[in-house]
Structure formats: structure tokens, C-alpha cells
Length: 300
Image (cartoon, rainbow, N blue to C red; front, side, top):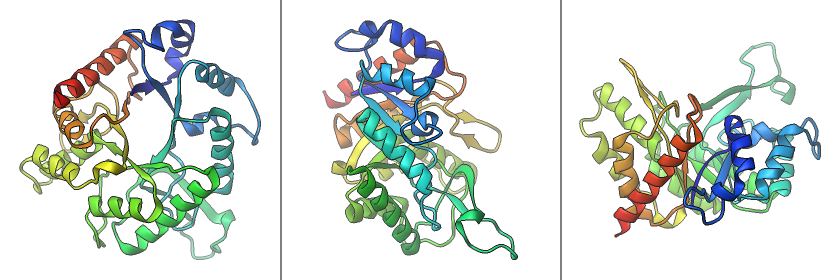
């Protein structure tokens, strides 16, 4: 299965031409992904224009809910309101997959006069990396299990593009993620672009020589049976850092890694991300056709 994001710029075109872009048409996509938080209501059970549009999309495509705000690795725990909203959205859409990131974002306000209560928790509105430590793994497992118990389904957890790393480490990233799946039963969403961006930044820092080989080693260390989805996206290279900005077509080395991942994991559900500088729909659909071609060739 191959999907794209359901972006505001393409709402009308997709819905007005649903027979072309769904089903067995040559231009069809198999599913649409949305960021869960964009379709939260002011109150559980509420509606609104965004949810009405999503309901129309659900009539033609399976929906994948991809979150950016659960902050699954946060030691302060999950936001009850956020989890309530997500549970309500899951009930409404019956999604193909629910996913979020192996990150933290919630924490107590750092002020010596403030008590550590729910009222003093802030959200950083970012996907911040967590240590690959035993303590951090326990927190992540607890929060993932809470989400799964509430949603009554397993979720998928995505690896991050990270711009710093913690010194405390009991596991490699792949060991950490594999252990998470063992303890919770969750799946993994493997973002191939994120792996490559991290490797490129290690090259720039003088820590690596061969980023592609490093990324393939990363993929080799992930159990094949736990991968529920693959993400592909473009990135931007600046003078001193590589940014995972989803602003362009998938870069050539990432296609190389996708072929390798397809050989490793088989025909895994694939999503092409494009979140900034969103192109014409036909440009995005060309990327879907490329993904299909790479999988066919990888598995030939």
C-alpha cells in the first residue's frame, strides 16, 4: 500500500476526483495520512469543518493517523486531554494505523518556586530525542502501553531525526526500539529519511565516513516482523547541518535505502511525506509511482 498526506491544498482536488485517485485507477493512492492533532475538536465528540472534510475522505480512502504531540517519551506522562481526543478520532475514523514518535516534549516548568503538578507542565511543541537508557525505555513502554490500552489497538512508533544525542546510553537506537516492541507489542514506523539525515549529520560532525553503509546496518538490526510502515521524504542540506524538512522530492540516496529496506522488510505500507513547499498533486503522485517502481525492482 502506498499513501500521501491529506493536505489542505489538495482537499478539493482529491475529493472532487475521488474516482481517479482511489480504487484501482493508475493514479490512485491506497491511503491518506493526516496529522492527528489537526483534527482534534474543542471537545470530545465535537465536529467542525476539518472533521467534516476528513469524514468525506474516509468514504474513499483508508486513513492513517500520524501524531506529533503525544510525546510518548515524556517522564511526566501523557496529556489526558490529548489521549481523549485521539481516542475519539480513532473511533470516528477507524484508521488503518495510529502512529507517533519516540520522543519527549512534555515537562515541568524549570523554576525552583513552582511545584511539580499538572498545572506546571509545558509542551515544547517539538520532537525532542530521548536517551537510549533503561530508565527512558521504561517511561516509553509505560506511555505506549497506556495509549494502546486506551485505543484497544497496537500503535506504531517512529524513529527520529535528531540534532543532538544524550550521553547516557544503555542501548543502540535499534536495540532500544526493538526492545520497545518486545515489551509492549507495538510496531515500528521506520522513517528512512530520518535515518539518512542522522547519518549525514554524523558525517558533518566527523563521526562517520560512509552514511549509506551505516543506514543499511541500522536497517539490518531491526526485526523485519515489527515494521508496520515506512516513511519517505525529502531533506535539505545546509552548510553545517542537514534538516529533515519534508520540503522536496525524495533524495536519491534515500531511494537507495528504500530499495534496501524493501528487500529487508518486504512489501511494507509506505507513505511519502511532503509537509513544506507542498507541490502540485501530480508531482506528489509521481513520487508514489517511483516508490512502486523501486519496490517492484527490489523484490524482482
